[in-house]
Image 1 (tube, helix red, strand yellow):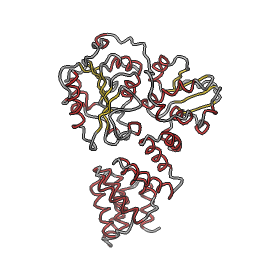
Image 2 (cartoon, helix red, strand yellow):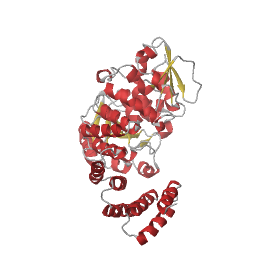
Image 3 (spheres, helix red, strand yellow):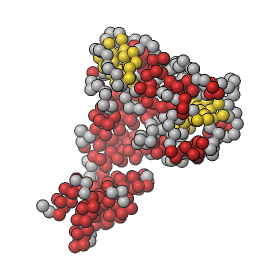
Image 4 (cartoon, rainbow, N blue to C red):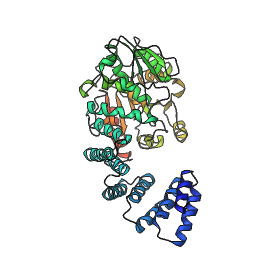
Length: 445
């Protein structure tokens, strides 16, 4: 076994320190050996030593600038370390110039274009990705996201079905029968089981399509996450709402909730709800149930962070201490957060915000609390979908590269008629967004 074969074996076994030691042995004899520098860089990256990893890969480039994988690896490291999309873009471009059919480099190049709002160029890169490797699932998934960002919904829904090959998107309890739900004929006049998927916000947003399915199927059951059960039962009593840990009833056809638009042939004109599609019993008690008089903005619900496990959470959530510095005096502010991060607890305690977390057992409670607000200001979380579906005035704070459902431009959204979008004009810069919120809020209070 050669020393390089041993490096590969040790790397695959997770023995990164051994890889580094082997690479150093090679470099002691041959200081410009590009493969040794590349191996060391990859091992250092796995160990989290980004600075040394960059140096190692950069030395590999000096020794062998014609290796596309080296440009690709350096671009990945730069993107992960500093988020410098300009430098990463140059690296990916060099990689695909040297190897036009480099699948992963084309895909990552597409991601840079997408996140920089160059959607046509992103599509070109993604199509090159799948052309070079028709089995590369990520490429097809990314094409669907661009279509949906562009508002090309019918094309987007069909391509969005590629998500089922991305195993991490499917809950363990989701039935594997997605291919059966591609048009109305699959459940016309039948007993239909619909299962929610992905996040709570996705379920809240796509719940609007369940009544349309009820017009076609003879009977509909909807299986959702436990926090949604009571709210959905109250909102649509004709549908059997069951929790994901409950036994699935007998059914003829099955459809994932986010596949309903494909089956129902939904286009942009069909997205806007004509009226609120969520309802509560609204039995909120105490000081939180006194909504202000019409025309006054005095009670404002706040949501500043989402699930920290979400991949893009670092871009969408805002530290409470920053949000507080932009809130004008006058209104009464209420936290609609069920969970508050440790880093925000002290800021919340020392502020005048009313902490309502003890009142929020499930999303029905959150919805009932939202109904007592004159305005909800939220980052992109389930609470924003909740307030929007209730037709409560909602100001949504969006990162520069938002989720597909919000598009890239405009201050309104077809999904929720009472929602106003506040968008970042530069990546990770919240101050201009929050300044606009403060200015608009000051005019209304």
